Image 1: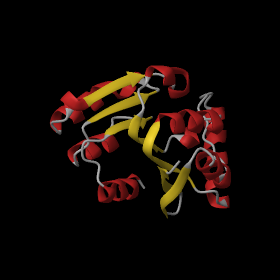
Image 2 (image 1 turned 180 degrees about the vertical axis):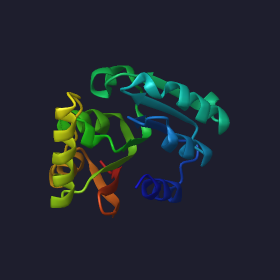
Image 3 (image 1 turned 90 degrees about the vertical axis):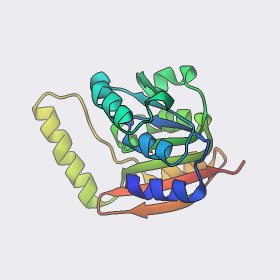
Image 4 (image 1 turned 135 degrees about the vertical axis):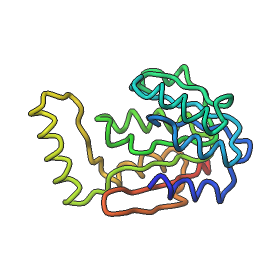
Length: 182
């Protein structure tokens, strides 16, 4: 579903924009936006385990001079992060138990577009996450996934002055790009 938000953002034009990718892993989405003309990108990632691969990817794609990486929980470090024209959260909302805090921080940092990919609110997705979370609990892994209500996600963001501009989905994931209008 990252390809869906990338297609939409590129069609709207990303030239000279600043990008903030939250939970971007190795930074594949930010790299694509930089290659499409974005000026700079910051990636705030919870895990430091991605750093070596992220540096390698940025070097290989020739964008390392325009990438800044920061490790930490975005909600906790948000005051240290500059606002950006485009904020991307690809498969991040489902990894955070406090959706309201995460999206609240994201809307404050979004200048124009907030692009999200999160699990669809369907029984088969919820069942899969219950099974996955049960397996994690059995393995004594603290990580859990969440299916946050789509109407609550959209209500929180639209109440902050955004309108939905693009939606797409596949069997598991839903992509939404919202634009700040107020």
